[in-house]
Length: 285
Ligand SMILES: [Fe+2]
Image 1 (tube, helix red, strand yellow):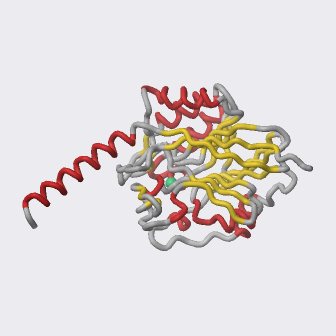
Image 2 (cartoon, rainbow, N blue to C red):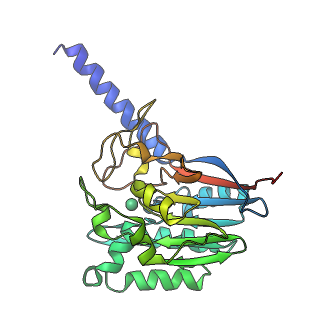
């Protein structure tokens, strides 16, 4: 290869890495609107996922300020707020979620990192219980295979066990399994499901979720025009559900690109994301 080409490739790689470092520190706030006859009053939700201990300003003050500007009625957390590997540090996740709960209702569902912390006490001690209890004392509604009712909204947090997060060939989730874990969906209310992995939209729909909120895939690391996400932390390539909004049979799923990274610490054309969902009352004529 000619030297000019080698230099051009090195420059492009360096430029890409610089851009990635910039994007990791600059989130975007993106809005979605959903109309439903089940909604009685217009409401605004903020959905956060996959913080992985990222901090935007000291104590996440920039993130808190951006959320405050939206003036949401409630905050929904989709899990993976910390990184649970050989060791686990929960400080930034705890600090942010507590600060959010001091201002408005917060509903929290587990991601694979919380689930790992819960499953291996021999590795993490009682960290999961201490984290959960600390957040509950701060007013957070913890939804580990549980449902909370908030006026005409039902909010369910589904725990997905490790086989559903397996690399390359994850287990397949069926609607019956969702029912076995969390009971029947609330068909009278607008049913929101916090399910960390978006891989099982058909099961979530069939179970009865009007709106599923997921994350986990960090937008696919690098996002290309027309193609979308290139690679997930579960080593899937060009998976369509890495980020964005999906609709089938009148049921919706919104997948967050997340706020942080771990393991593969790259974001390109894939800024961290705060999701705002405007729930609108659908007029009945
Ligand atoms: Fe995850």
